[in-house]
Amino acid sequence: MSTAPATVEDADAGDVVAALSDAPFVRIVAAADGDSLAASGVLARALKTRGTPFQVRVDAVPDPIPGEDDDVVLGIGAGANGGDLSIAGATSASLVAATAARELGADPNPTLALAGIASADRSLDAGDAATLLAEAREGAAVDRRPGLAVPTTDLSEGLAHSTLVHAPVSGDPEAARAALDDLAVGADPTDEDHRRVASWLAIEATASTTRAAEAVERVLRPHATPDGRFATVEGFADVLDAVARERPGTGVAIAIRDGGMRSAALDAWRTHARAAHRALADATTGRYDGVFVARVDSAPPGRLGTVAQLCRDFRSPEPVALVVGDDGAAAQSVDSARLGDAMREAVRAVDADGRSVGTGTRATARFENAEVSTFITAFREAL
Image (cartoon, rainbow, N blue to C red; front, side, top):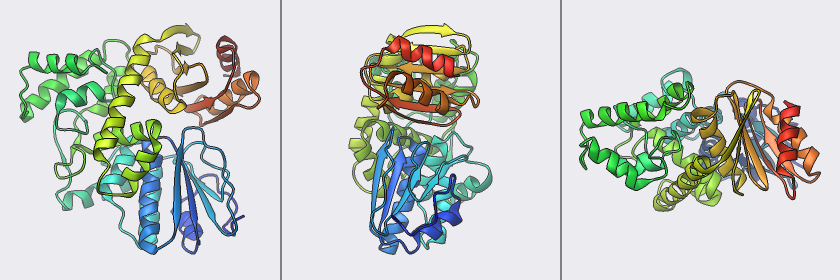
């Protein structure tokens, strides 16, 4: 095993620097979400600058990876632990990574770090994030504008494939184009066009639950990046979330390199969004005391995580949303509800070899040959 310090439950930037500064080889294991992916990219770039060999792996339900010889194993995100230290990302793993990268002698890519922070649903205008935002603005890389937080300049594509919101046109590019035509939005939208679309979406997306009125704010008034790979910081965050969950290899490439892979990342984003919105629209649902359950067809655990988030924010009248497939499940809650513990207990009840990871507000599991109704009952009882 490594000679780095014993595992730190939630390492700060100083812990990360101490562990990585003299490491002969670094293994990064990241959870499948945009913040963890962006943080892994920020640190990988810093290691590359220093000439330190590294490996990055992204997994929705990661197995602990032991180090070999003097390797340092760094876990990033919920459940990515078991190595020498872990950035749990209580605020944002990307913020910790950006600070550590500076102390390691590298300048973090501010747009990548900001996208990670946005993925963690943290404000870009306060605290250390505001410093990164100021750096990006000095380079004329970021400018806040009205409209939608999407990764492309094609509004119909962004409207149909955003996983930041669930609306009647979500997952349906033709319906999105028709809606924009009805709103008389042209191919080169003005600020007034952007405002009109944002106002329309805010109404369309908030008809289902009271929580949706707050959740829809994530997709409004973005930080535009006209010279960047993606049209907005928040749209970049959406892509990072999608590729981390749908095509991790593509996600790693996007995070550690500035050039290439944009088309592949957007393709993964579209695929992920269509599948997630379709799964939520077609789900068989049930409401219980405190838990809203959505039963969907079999899907990768990472994709279930996106469905659970959309369900929590735009469909669930209860504080906890549980999405269950044939061989996996994901749950998200509004406030801390010990979801990680509940998921672990439920998996243990149906599959001794199953695995789960989670925190108080989100959890993901992978299992086999489980009776879904038994799992749902076990999860509810564990809560």
